[in-house]
Length: 375
Image (cartoon, rainbow, N blue to C red; front, top):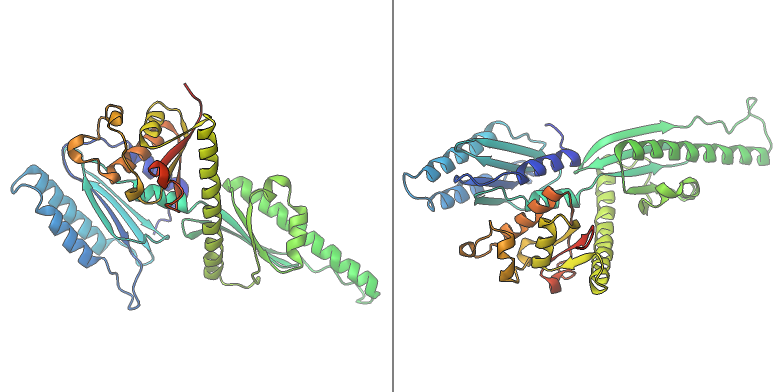
């Protein structure tokens, strides 16, 4: 399986954002590909049921039905022939018509819920949320002699570095006073901490890491923290007690929980900052209408969205001329609104952050944005 990184996912999202309707149905399929307790996939009945129920909505003999059935057939063939057993999630985007398009993204990170979306353009909200939820981060597992550093990205190990500092705590003849031995041991520990921080600094620079999790025993952790330069210390989001021999999958599980907790704290801080800026008439807007207007005009620097499209409320008809593709007869589907917001964010270079606690943005219709400037 070709491993997907956050950067590559962002490229896929940018490509999908650029699609315009051409009169043919566009299929967006998200699948949980994790095997059940018997080692089997559980999505085949979902595929059969959902494709059949969508097919009957097209007129018999129509070009749209023919296009949809070609896509459905291609999706089924892909699932039967090319889906790898190691994949935990799968996203497929496809259209058949004047310009055929088919993109399948197999993921190490799981997709929690099966979804089939058929519209005139890609449904990109779940893909963008997956990127937001799974930023790359570094996990440092160390004791006083050995260090393991992992870079986790979208549920997989993107990079792994390990080293052992040679034990120089004993004299050549093996005889030394207790005090001298103690100093040698301390020097050994300090040297190992120094080498660990140097390796971490190089990895953070090369991989452009913004979050670090430290793990180890009560001896090495204070030594590491003492030597972390400010630009690294500011990236540390959690400190765990893990043994140097902790299995990789347990490290991933523990650090993922730390990442989720940090996301929740960061979300709350961002929303407080958004409201503070908005109340002071600063560089922030809230609500669908003002946020969309800022995105369309390139003012938005960071888009904040509720993690569920159902929480995003369209609250003013006056925004309709701003987004011509959302028409009254479509009843302003919240998924369409969410996709449109993300699409405009991508086109204008605005960052997208999903707020997992639905209560935080509830009073403003689930959407807001920090601005680059005000007009």
